Amino acid sequence: MLSEKSNRYLTVVVVGGGSGGVDVVLGLSSKLNRAFHRLILVTARPRYLFFPAALRLLANENAPISSMYMPFDNIFGTFPGEVKVGTVTSIEENKDAAAQRGGFVVLDSGEKVIYDVLVVCTGSSFDGHLAFPNDEEGFKEHVTKWRAKIKESNDIVIVGGGAVGIELSGEIKDFHPMKNVTIVQANPLLLSDLYPNRYRIDLEKRLRRRGINMIFDEAVGNSGEHHPTLKLRSGTEIPCDLLIPARGGRPSTTPLKFMRPPVLTDRGYVKVAPTLQVDGHSNIFALGDIIDWPEAKQLMKIIYGHSEVVVANVMRVLEGKAANRVYKGSTEMLVITNGQHGGATYLGLCYGFTFGDFLTRLAKSKDVLVGKTRAKIGLPAKPCEKD
Image 1 (tube, helix red, strand yellow):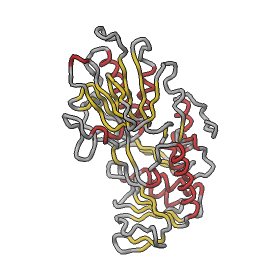
Image 2 (cartoon, helix red, strand yellow):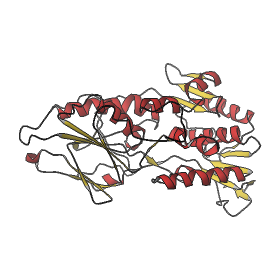
Image 3 (cartoon, helix red, strand yellow):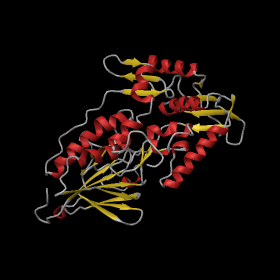
Image 4 (cartoon, one colour):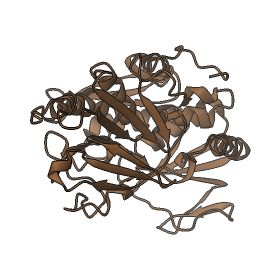
């Protein structure tokens, strides 16, 4: 509603144009009243980067850029929202209770964007092939460079046997079947012990059937950048003319670093209440990869858990009520592709269920969720280069 004292709009600012931010914007756009509310998305990139499509985009020279790099044009639906492209450098809260406004987000341009309620979903930052530049030209150059690296290499070593490493190996084998692909994993099995051994072993068997090599209980010694071989921690040398790191990302939480009271853990994650309000800052919410919550970081948890809680609670705060929707965690579910036609899925209900190629292909492998995602943000389901 409008403030009785200042007769002004109440402004919600969402920081982060990734999957979390887009999902919150979609949810709020259908609930906010244009007569009383403003909605602003602040994003470091001019377009939405749909990360689940990244590995196929890099491995497949024929994949359209718009399968991952999507315009924000229709994400507000009929609500008159605004997209501001810029990097948030800090958050300034208004400590004057009588002033009513929550504060400002400060952009690298020096612009200050006022907010009443702030939602932070800045995601993770990565190294190597997933370190996409923010600008459009840099993004396209990055894709071109990595496609060339993969195409011109014969012995590719992927460091990390988590979901990214597994899926990347399958994508490379799909589009470059003659290449020698090896996963080096520090653990005795793929993934982590969050998942049952039977599922981890099943994934290993599926990859080996495709000719993907796996080396367990090992770590990388030299970088392999200027050598035809890669030296492992044990002293073993393996052929390597392209080394790809596939370890987990780091939370992108620098703008929250100087908030008082402090909101970050020693690992850089945001401390939140079950309402997903930032500890000590009731008009700021956080979700996605950046929050300190005891669960695996996964897109499905954001879409079907975090964002619903945040949208409901933002609406209550705008109405002058206390947030009361709580996040209780999500069922562990992991859908891992093995190229376009297969993979393995784990659903953590009862004693846990595992599914193979057919269901995984239907759920994700066929188009890595691109069609569904594009339709959700108001684009034609089939990507094309003119987007």
